[in-house]
Length: 149
Length: 105
Image (cartoon, rainbow over all chains, first blue to last red; front, side):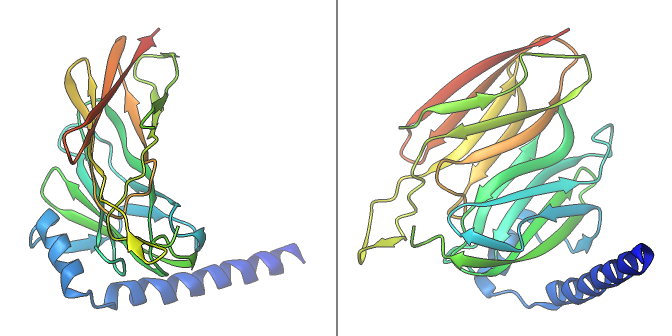
């Protein structure tokens, strides 16, 4: 009985992942979003994977959405993350914040609170010490827009 | 208004990872938000820096998408007792500072 339940749950989880990842990757960005991303990371092509963006599926208050970005890196020697950049794809202006890490940082992880005008996809980019760039996306539904409160 | 709040352990083990949580009371008014049909004047903190004994530890550039009362948490690791200084800079030049000593046992 329990294994059947677990199976169904994991199947459901797998289906969700399959649906959301290609949608996020295929989504074409608005020109101003693309420009804001280029301004921070240049023309480097980002790869998916090695970065996690944790955010609620539904945010009741768009003025205050908790997000955490963590990058899978040892933060030692050449294997480190230099900076994380966050963008909103459907806000009046796309920039949320950029975070940069110095020598005393133990993990390439940052938690913050972001403002979202409406339901949209949030993008996180991690710039690594070797110049490579990783990307993660999260779709967030917003009940009350952050520009109203 | 603009009171920084820092949450760190007062004592950690050498090399142990610990979370540094920071928050500053601030409206982060973008100048774009409409309230009863009007937009208020823009007032933003655009830069946050944390230094460990004077060395750059963590920095953030805040843009319009950062919430009011900007909260930032990051994870540090020290090998010796360290004083961390925190600085928030507003776009108009106003600055807010805080510092916290972390004892490495």
